Image 1 (cartoon, rainbow, N blue to C red):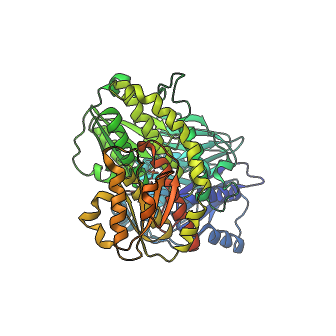
Image 2 (cartoon, rainbow, N blue to C red; image 1 turned 120 degrees about the vertical axis):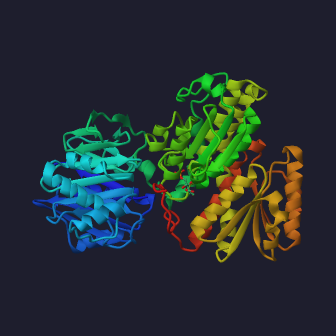
Image 3 (tube, helix red, strand yellow; image 1 turned 60 degrees about the vertical axis):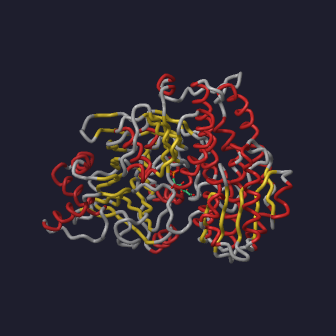
Length: 619
Ligand code: F6R
């Protein structure tokens, strides 16, 4: 949500606009509905901004070009306060002399009160945004301090909420100042030029050397220098790191869409997440965890907090963690956890799952858990993001950059990381599954090839999807770990194809949802392996019969060789055999492909579905 880019480099040749526009296009995936840029131009700052996609801004720049400059900032905005209009798009001006502009990600919660004070002082506002308040405050502070860093520092003291702010002032050419609280901002380190971005994608085309910032810090970049201070004014230092993926990894690699590419990336995403987790005997090693083995042994409850797709990874994890460790495991939507009175203490391990590591709801849940004394562990795909940094421990997934708004490879990588965590806890605590951890890891190592097999056999799924482009509602049923897969299949279809879709636990069918079944209603059923315990397979086959008898069109995802489903299936989609708990890594894939193809057939933008943002950085 909201993309931020800042650049300072040599003045002659002035490539600020190009760098900023390239950065904004790489940040498009975060989701936005307007965009704007500003460059320093002599004694003032010039801006261009437009509602809609970057193409509109590019057209505006064509009609009214900006001068070459060495200093610039840019922004893609996802509207919160004020609609997505030209006027509300960032950058916003502070003061009346046209010298200061500012961009912002997040929400300034006390903006009403601050705006009222400024109005009383005669300030005239041009937009409905909370951001403009910050712009005027920084301009006012600059008038007395004549130093942008200090002006920013003074203003952040009075702001409440979460924010990243970037400002430039015409009297300080070659300087961009950024501030962050609970909102992302990273520094890109170049030669004679430096960058700021919401994430490294903003500058990956120019440098792979980056600097991580802490919370509540202000960073000032010039072409030659990067300096960091805390909100309290004390000098600080960022943490340098090397970005180990390159620009090509964030590009489409020959596929039509990022989503298609990312579905194809999944064998690698799982394999890379598994890499280096075992010693030569197959036992798990977790060097990167920062919670001691003794503390992990003492854990008597696991609570998983996450949102959306990540929460479905958590639901899969519950089955595995409880099975392997016998530790009770709860899964809760992060935004619900935060606002009730959860029962957690020092022996509770609160595991957050987040691709971006910036989801505000999840971040707030982690902080709440921390305040309640719990141990916090983050499963995250983004190096240096806020959630892992706010957690006691981190287990990184290695899915690589996920650009399409709808999560695909990150989901499989999250599930994989949850298995690793579950097996590690089982190994640490002894118990019956401790000895089986190496065998399960061995099974997991075979999964990437099996995912590839599924991906390679999706022609029929694509045909079915194209045929169903006019469908108005689709249901998804699953039991056990198939239940979260059903939820995920439904979510993918909702967000990509804007089709009403619901996922149900198949056992729940008779308690209500079966009333939805009418002749021709398409229903995907995720069938557990015939080896499943407790006669689960037979129960799902019965569910298929029940809906078929009422006219449903049954689209059945079943293991190779499972002939029991054939008489009741209108379509059988095959996946290779795998142990029951690991099946979501395979059964999810046809549902992703189905949603992608159906949305494409409807002519929709699958990488950036309407109203959605990749990083949901507001509560
Ligand atoms: C769905 C999707 C979202 C995210 C959710 C959490 O395709 O992408 O539901 O899973 O917003 O995002 P992260 O994992 O970044 O915390």
